[in-house]
Length: 254
Ligand code: PEP
Image 1 (cartoon, rainbow, N blue to C red):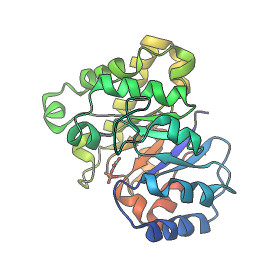
Image 2 (tube, protein in one colour):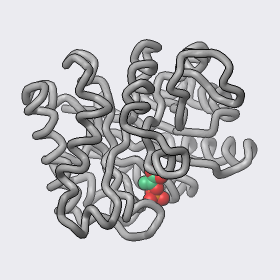
Image 3 (cartoon, rainbow, N blue to C red):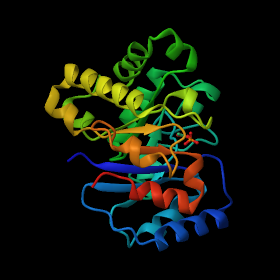
Image 4 (cartoon, rainbow, N blue to C red):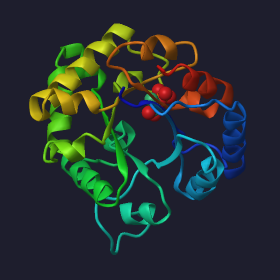
């Protein structure tokens, strides 16, 4: 089975102490993950080492950065490189979240560079894609997300792309309380997998975990994750509440 993944995206929330307490509370639930399941915490940069040591004794609990810079190194004050993340044993990084695309003008080409730098540094990108509301209303969401994959990922060979985690996050569902229906999520995930299959073959496409993101909560996770092509979720708001995220982890297919 492909990996089933519950990924928490804390964004720019929580103090260090609040983050530590949240991790303690989630880990206190002692959810045993199977070899096919992962729980990932994408935390702010200053909390990466603390989070790494919190999950150090746990099996299949991982830490992720929320971003890295699209250049290798140099005079880019305030930025963090993939190599720096690798040097503190961070093995995952969210790439191309819609908030970064929107507020920091990240383009598909820049994201291709970030993906390359992550892979060069043994970091698995959690690559986000998804359409804004006007594209959904125009009914052109399938083409829109296919271009996002093509321009940021399709330069990679199959043996690299197979390790990437994709998160489909319709922008109209992020932080809005408006969730894609289970049918909408499944339809888009199947489409993404078919786009990957057309480029890389169905065997490679079948290995790639595709997460759904957009107002996933404890009370809708099980149903969303039950679809055959939905391999878990990338979770913002609900990942800040221990009881919610615990339930979301428990909702993963096993
Ligand atoms: C996200 O930020 O990736 C996200 C999906 O947020 P939320 O769960 O709050 O909609």
